[in-house]
Image 1 (cartoon, rainbow, N blue to C red):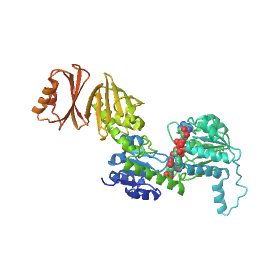
Image 2 (image 1 turned 135 degrees about the vertical axis):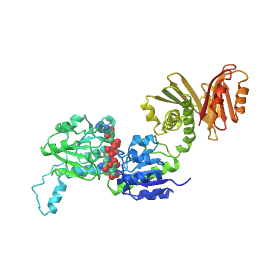
Image 3 (image 1 turned 135 degrees about the horizontal axis):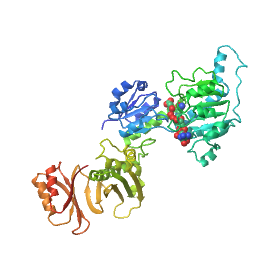
Image 4 (image 1 turned 90 degrees about the vertical axis):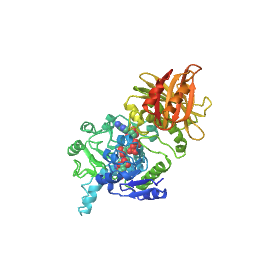
Amino acid sequence: MPAPKVLISDALSPAAVQIFKDRGIEVDFQPDLGKDKDKLAAIIGNYDGLAIRSATKVTPKILEAAKALKVIGRAGIGVDNVDIPAATAKGIIVMNTPFGNSITTAEHAVAMMFALAREIPAADASTQAGKWEKNRFMGVEITAKTLGIIGCGNIGSIVAERAIGLKMKVIAYDPFLSPERALDLGVEKVELEDLLARADFITLHTPLTEKTKNVLSAEALAKTKKGVRIINCARGGLVDEVALRAALDSGHVAGAAFDVFVEEPAKENPLFGHPNVVCTPHLGAATTEAQENVALQVAEQMSEYLLRGAISNAVNFPSITAEEAPKLKPFIALAENLGSFAGQLTETGIKSVHITYEGTVAGLKIKALTSAAVAGLLRPMLADINVVSAPSVAKERGIVIEETTREAQGEHDALITLTVVTEKQERSVVGTVFADGAPRIVAIKGIKVDAEFAPSMIYVTNEDKPGFIGRFAGLLGDAGVNIATFALGRDRQGGSAIALVEVDGAVPDSVLASVQTIPGVKQVKPLKF
Ligand SMILES: NC(=O)C1=CN([C@@H]2O[C@H](COP(=O)(O)OP(=O)(O)OC[C@H]3O[C@@H](n4cnc5c(N)ncnc54)[C@H](O)[C@@H]3O)[C@@H](O)[C@H]2O)C=CC1
Ligand SMILES: O=C(O)CCC(=O)C(=O)O
């Protein structure tokens, strides 16, 4: 197999290039390419991996051209420059490095707080202009002041720890912060209104979502304490920039320090030019240490995925370690084939899917297996589905998915049972993986069989009556269709029977129609795996 190829289209630390090379991955380092979307679209089709920071915008158009792309690695935290639903729909794993730049970004927020409190940038400019304006710059102490943190996750918590060390009182608004964690951090968990009314400094550390957009709106700003200072080192759009400018102009807000802007690169901005505003060009993560951390980490993660199938810090797929990947592989194939078997027999809307993992397979990453089963199930109906996109597609369609794990109960060390409930019926199929690594079907609708999945198969359900096998084999023989393997099962003598037959090549419709006329035959279905 040729070595995978990775494109680095942003200014990552060169440490990443070395990691890829050391792992035997071909790497193309073009740090300015991300800014030229047409050039990126023209060459992206050649790569298995794309490593980026924030300048590269991975749009549906880029993804459309990315025919071989398997993984996008963001050397940083925010993945808002990647169209995740579009990448997911194409089965592309999107990874980030959730911790590598947190300390650095928290330190930037603290630096911005000091810059505001002591007007350092303006005082620096004035001093270097030879003005020596000792009386112009009257700062404020931060000791004993209240810091309001909006979003107390990785970065917010580090800011909280630092601020407590600086003898500030820290209050935090974060609906997902548990009371125990707040207690551990030594912060007071409050509602937004309370934070707005009490904070002397407010710092934002949430992602930009529908809920957090303009969390500091004109209305919210009006509820803040007069003289408040606001710091945003998270994402542009968390604060209404126009409303903030008005609050600065009126003197209600004493200062604002912004690293991130609604539009970036920010060439013009409502905040620019105000004497009490400090701005940096999205430098939160810009330290040697952080850039080295995230570059090394993203290169390691992408290499592990491309070479060993291990997934970590993916925002659109469960994590799988390099040790788990080879163990999972045959069960992923089994789950996908069981799903495909059920999907090919399903002709009405699917209401729910129940998957039972039994024995050793119950100890594996069942989320990944469920994704594979659902992808197999929906593929006969939806051509573009893949293991990464399957859960979200199922959710959009209102299909309920349930998983159960339990210890081995019968003769097999590991079993997967897939039960699909449609508008008309319930169908279940059971499979295992034998020691040779080949996935097999071991029961259908409660009837035992033993068959491997093959590229071309015929599934027949019939009444268990003498003569069926002879006639069936005769019809196939007369049509020149060779039978490779023949698996039979029945619930009881004279009851319901099934046949799962592997044939060489496709079976003409006319032959299937003839099989359907054999007395006692209920259903005949060609299957492909
Ligand atoms: N300026 C820069 O260069 C950098 C910016 N960032 C940005 O900083 C932000 C925070 O990053 P992390 O702390 O790593 O993320 P995180 O995911 O660890 O923390 C985010 C926190 O926001 C909270 N949150 C979510 N919705 C909320 C809401 N509606 N109201 C209040 N809180 C809410 C979450 O519960 C979570 O605790 C991200 O947007 C990230 O992209 C990160 C690194 C560098
Ligand atoms: O790569 C950068 O400089 C931006 C970092 C950032 O915003 C993030 O990690 O979310």
